[in-house]
Image 1 (tube, rainbow, N blue to C red):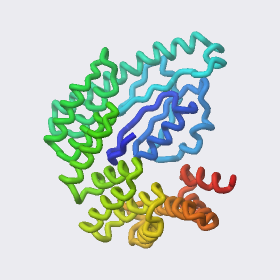
Image 2 (image 1 turned 90 degrees about the horizontal axis):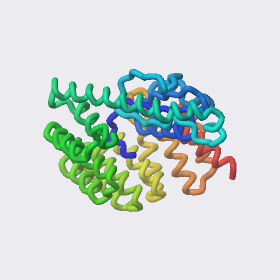
Image 3 (image 1 turned 30 degrees about the horizontal axis):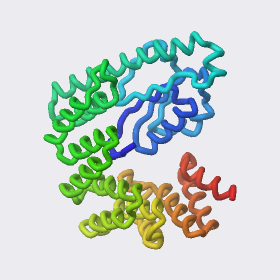
Length: 321
């Protein structure tokens, strides 16, 4: 799942199930607003209890065999009992969920598409409308109007308004088609055209880091920081890459400590959160074998944000060993 820091409103049906709850976590971590819908036939609130209270998470008790009217940008329909024990317990409800529920979600998707179409008719330069249509055409089945060609047309419309987001749109299509070469080409083109954009630079650096090209990832960040020395978000991005790759750990630690000492961190929402910085410091220290110091950083992350799930898992992993 690629994150271009463009917040979306995402509906997850069956969101309190095992798979759905993990998807909710991931979408929140990627910076989206999540509406979790579940009738708790097999799902349980225990799976999403830690997400309740997150300002970007909303829980709705609803059976999707009945129509649902909400405004969202994407829909993930996971509402169906998966275990034989559960679906054999009430085969009628299972069938209704699989058939009527899917029909209702397809109907919702068509209404969402109509809203996007209305938006771009009223304002052809509206990026949100074009990006919503692009996602619809990529995800909808052909019988509902899904089409790679139409998705590409939306990507070109986006590029006319904002060339950088046009590159991201083309990369989204390529990623859906599992065309890694084209994804990287578009990410590199975004950086070439917008070298001062941390969104573009960080997207490419993350791609390189996640494909075992740490040296290239650091070089990408170095070029950005040379152009924008003292950029706090850039320093955090460099520290995060060090934590992910396990390379240049001393430099990563120094960058993250610079972030924590920067004015506004902790009060300015445009800057990295201190909890995330402490969490990444914990990762760096753990990779260096400094378990006690890593534990301290994870605990500080949780003190600052008790709902920091990644820090909880990292701390539990350390205590198990």
